[in-house]
Image 1 (cartoon, one colour):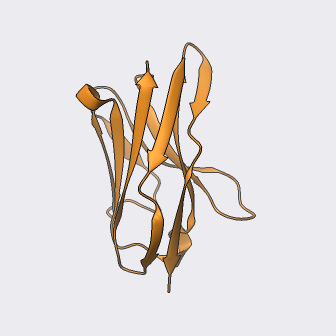
Image 2 (cartoon, rainbow, N blue to C red):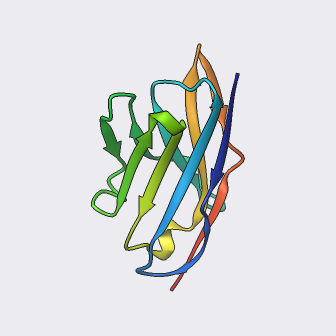
Length: 113
């Protein structure tokens, strides 16, 4: 069983920064992913990190967002810089373990212009 809890969202002006955290209790999958969902849009993948530290990003956030993890703390981070109004969304943490999907409750990020 996995329980994911996100934090760190908030309201920020365009060009600002936020750091999201996702703490996993219990086990966690080898791959941890941040997704986001804006109002009226489908949920989209933002960034992924494997247990070995390999990362991948959506084209829309490359060069602005950085995903990292602290395995000792069972925590995954998403550092978001140069935020744009288009980044406004609920951000979710996800992992897959034993063929089951686990999601956090989400944290709201709002970027004002």
